[in-house]
Image (cartoon, rainbow, N blue to C red; front, side, top):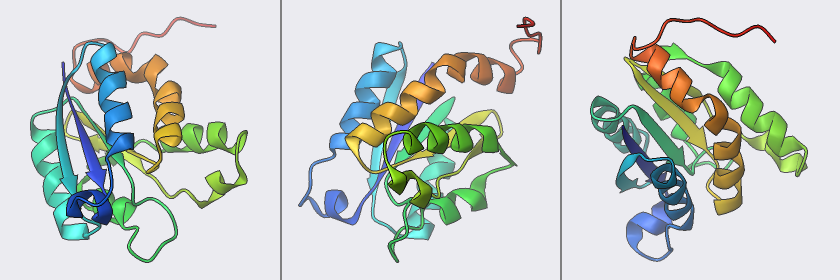
Length: 160
């Protein structure tokens, strides 16, 4: 299954900062058997949206890292909203709720999640720890959600 990691960072794009959070997400996806494409863009809404459109066209899941906070150039959620066909608020809410158990700064996350066609797009924080923790929340439901989005599985759920 194809996946993509989109790093949104002026510093990484300019080559003055390492893409540690992108490295973490790539390693986690590859460990789960995904083929991973990577892209880095600056904190510019038009460039983020264009990259999301291109990556979603060839990937079952696109994970973004960076640009989800309160800083003036944090525009990843706004760019993501312009390309989503349907939002999946439960994913973003669960990631924030989990993060809130570790830091009050989780309240400042504005990340979104949703579908563009059958491709799931999820905004994650710009830190390696935030990416690792967010992926841990997403992981148990990821493949099932991707199969449902692609129409590969009936929506049958075991009652708990």
